[in-house]
Image 1 (cartoon, rainbow, N blue to C red):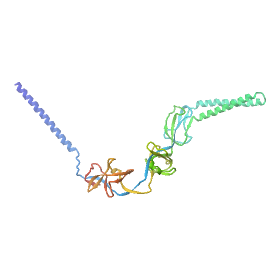
Image 2 (cartoon, rainbow, N blue to C red; image 1 turned 90 degrees about the vertical axis):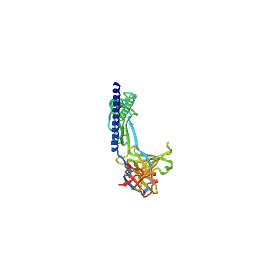
Image 3 (cartoon, rainbow, N blue to C red; image 1 turned 60 degrees about the vertical axis):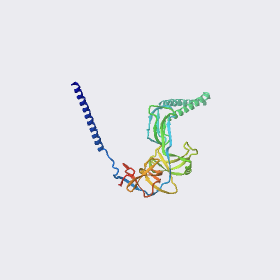
Image 4 (cartoon, rainbow, N blue to C red; image 1 turned 60 degrees about the horizontal axis):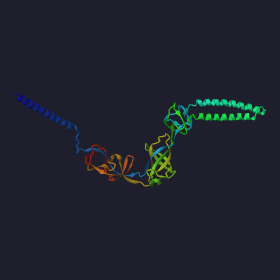
Length: 356
């Protein structure tokens, strides 16, 4: 009886396990079917809405452009000529300053006390000189005493002039018109000769520098004017005059060319901005120009989608140059071709197309 009971229990365990497995399998299958029903299935036969452009032969701007950097006409770090505690800093970063404007005030109280002492000495020596002059004329004293008094007076006056010069140097002033572009010390610190306090940058006048390959160096002449634009303000045209053409190639086997130019009245062009100097060719070329946004593929192999018989056809092209947000195609397209310019989501080679 015990053996029969054991067999029955084992059979029940097996049946129960199989039932649980069957329930789990049914549930998983049901979940899979439910998930698949919610997943978007792309119908490759359904037409895709796109925007297109019909290509035409256009004039191609064949001018040269060389990228470079704007630099300030003048820039310097200001330091004190004498040492002393900084009592006051009269400007901050971004302050526009004029030549001779006071910037930093050093403590000069001790120098002023020394000046007062010297002035007292001068008063006494001047009195001595007057008295000794009268006595010397009356032969009441030896002439050497008068000479010593006169020398002492001259020495005191030199000492006074030295102190006045030192006191004037406790007020540090701007060497030229410009903008404070760095504040390198704070009030209460100790200034010393050679320790930078402020940086002043003059951007009213600018220098623009480019590097030119030797084959193109003949395009530039000294004191000749060229059109320069800043990348941040492409519509603002600046006139730069060539101030330097390098006589020695740099590490990249190109030659530096520098231009001098005036900034805009509101000083929009900042030091360190990037820009271009533009040259134009006398001849005008024609070609196929497309929007850069229409290009797919890779940098090594650019491609576009052509529209042929209502379908998209992925087509290889060759790009000769890029002009801002457009590209000049030298091979792979012709006048009259229709290309996709927008609507690339889900687009593939051979897709049915409808034009918006």
